[in-house]
Structures are given as structure tokens and as C-alpha cells.
Image (cartoon, rainbow, N blue to C red; front, side):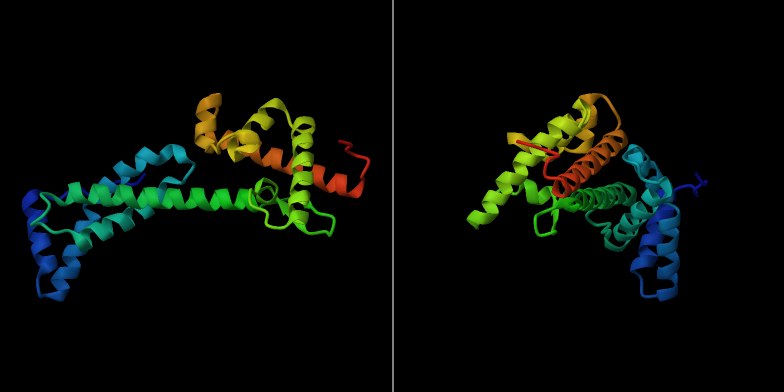
Length: 221
């Protein structure tokens, strides 16, 4: 990691903040740049807390810097004692928002990832199979058929570890949905390893759906 400039002294910070709020546009821009550059060490320090989330450190620092810039723009010396204290919260919030957004996106991608096709050739995702509300009786019957197929495939195609992870991850068969990190802690393995097992299991289920549609004798309930 590159070396960052030393933080400003309390007096230097006060001078920069005054210039930032002043009428001289050039001095305000220079003050803002200085406040950002001299607080990048704080960004790196906070970003280190998130090193275990499989994100590149440079990316974490970039996102954290956005939080720092927001802090510099919105800091009010009359309400806050030091910029660093206020900026730390803004940096942390920015990183958390990014990670939550990525988690949500990853979750949506997994749920909508095709695992097979129905009788008409339309793609079926895990979300389709685990959906709860089905307004049409024909669709409800199709759901029950798919759930039955899914249950059989989970038992027959997946290893015990894959089965446990898929059931926990998607809250199948009456359970509650669990995050990859929580599963990793429960099974004493890393979140990235849980992700790899999950993807492998979904591929097995997708291939099983496709094979069954092509050969009705492949599975018999």
C-alpha cells in the first residue's frame, strides 16, 4: 500500500476549514484538496477493517475516499470537534453502503440465475421454484411440480455439504435465508468457499433440470 501524507495538525486543519468556507474560490479548492489528501491515511485505516470481504484494497480505498470527500463538503466545525471523527463515520458508511449494494446485487443474480426450463422452453430460476405467491391454479400446480423436482434433485445430485448450503442460503423447506458469511461461520469455512460451493450446486441443479426435460425417464417421483 502506498504511503500517505501525515494528518494535519489541529491548527492546520482549522485554517483549511476556514479557507474552505471563505469567499476565495482558489484557496477553497486548495484547502479542500489538502483536507482530502491529508486524511487519506484515515481512509486506508478504516478500509483495513473490510479486507476479509473479498474486495480489492484499492477499491475499498477509492470508495472510502468518496465518503471522505462527502465529509469534507458537509463538515460543520460548530457541530463537530474534529474533521477526522466526523469523516470516520462518513467513510465507514460509504463502505457499508457499497458492500450492502454488492451483496444485494449478488443475491439477485443468484436468485435469477437460470437452473432449467419449463415445458414451454422458458427458463426457470431458483426464485421461480421457491416463490410463495402464485395467483393462477395452473401456475401453482407447476410450482408444486417444480418443487418436487427440486427436492429430489437436491437429495440425489448434491453432496451433503452442497445440500446444506443451498437449503440454508435460500431458506428451502421451511427454513430461513442465511448469508454466505453466516454459513461460513456455521460450517467453519470462508465466505468465498461457500460461494464456490453454492455456484457449483446451482450448476448441478440447472443441469439436472435440463436433463430431466430432455429425458422424462431421468427422474421418477
